Image 1 (cartoon, rainbow, N blue to C red):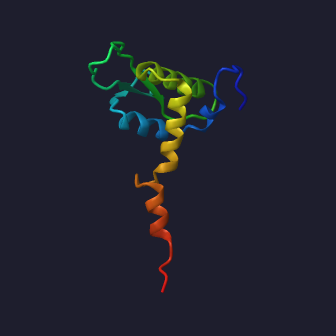
Image 2 (tube, one colour):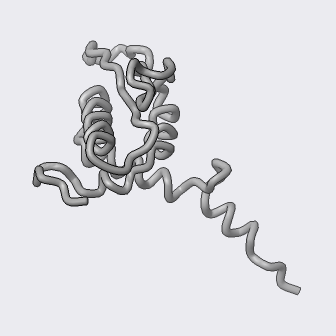
Length: 122
């Protein structure tokens, strides 16, 4: 899929919903439940801290990311999180994609998973 806006990082097409969900939960976002649109889950931001950030946006996570509106929803999610965290969207995107590489399917770090699968040396 080709993105029409050159400002959008094409790596957003690599993000899976489970990657973004893991990131949100790790960062303290709270799953509220399904949004009005059943294709989206609603997340509330972490509790406000003592920082100057008083904006409390809700984030909408698409259940899947395959085409059209789903990709736009993921772009919007990353933008919402970046604004809340006061970071660049590209940095949030990078962290989401890095977390996928660092964790195995069962949540264990990928390095532990590899070590467990190596044959014993006698």
